[in-house]
Length: 149
Image 1 (tube, one colour):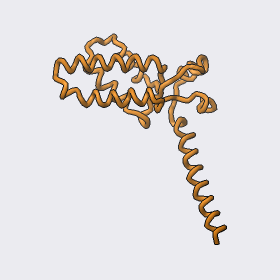
Image 2: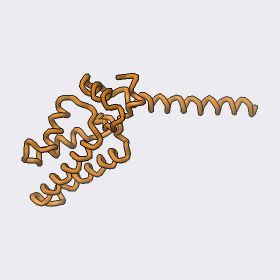
Image 3: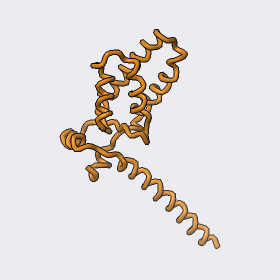
Image 4: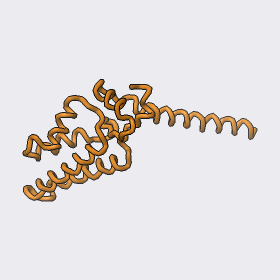
């Protein structure tokens, strides 16, 4: 009797483990990279990349919203917005950090104009996105996805 329960428990744990592994492996597969992105990755495989998938983060919509506050159409924020509009789904980690720092400056400047209370939701969203990037929740794992390039 105990043997049957152990077998059932074993298969239950095994099933959950397989589903978990499948979810982890398939997480990176639904990201469509352009040929230009693939070529960049192949040239520089040791570099860290951030993924902009809407399934992982709201970074794209956030950038589109925040860029409305930035009057300088040649700024890093607007350049990044154009990059995203072209359909790119990954970016260099250091570049993304730089853009998020610039976005924080833009938000702080806007807060001086309209008041902090109106800007608070944008600052909260920015902090979440920065934490996702720093914690590597948006990390594009080249080694895991190399077979799909």
